Picture 1 (cartoon, rainbow, N blue to C red):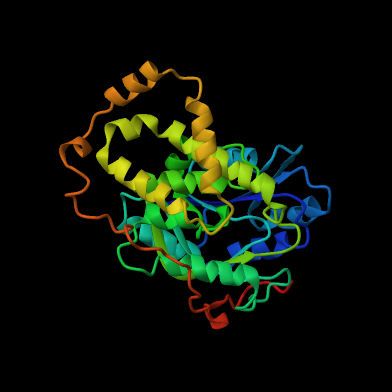
Picture 2 (cartoon, one colour):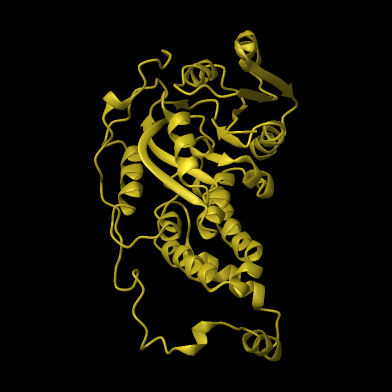
Length: 341
């Protein structure tokens, strides 16, 4: 299956946007081998719009609503039949024309990386580039500027902000997505996958702007803070649980995990480190002193061989990374074949 690539699109109630999303795929400079869409029980006319693309090589499936994570995992399974690469696109976003060609070329040059993400433009519901002083645009400029600072590792950058932003910004080796299926989060199923990829040194960033990420009133993320904050707390606990064995085994994994967790204390999204400490305290509250002593006594690693006071300070020490506004990508970088909305 040499370099066959599938674009997979989960669709839910995006009749207004799905046509433009598909047109952005169809006018790629490197045509995908498959375009697969699952309509996840939309209540609007999304399926009718999708069916108009069936004659242009788009594979359209529909079923009852099961949620974004289940739909993405199903799409990955369909793509895995004959495509070693998969590119995700949400039904309200758009690719710029060179996205697949650039990501595929990067994958060739980086055989040790499983996920590739790129720069993005934030656009409004009408597809216009969002003004630099708009709140969401400022957030993205600040999040991307963190990575421009010296000595920032990928795990640290992602711990401080999910700058990748969306599953639309994931081009991946299909085998990696099969081995790391999306989890049943409502808001941040992309974040857990990306954090895992960064911790496993599997994430590569291309700074070229190759995606239009649409912000509009029906985005899942536009919600009151509590549900998102609770899910962020659960995600961090899941990261501890999922990577426990690797943390015991690998000093390099521990170093990256430390970078992610310590950076998350300054997370510029919806994570509260103080609440995480409460959750961790609750997890050990019922353990006795001897049990905790045995746990500590069982820890092994080269970290015990050197006093922290004599070690070189890590890059994070003594630095507070305050996100600063970065340059806004030029609107001239946008696709000339993007459909009018």
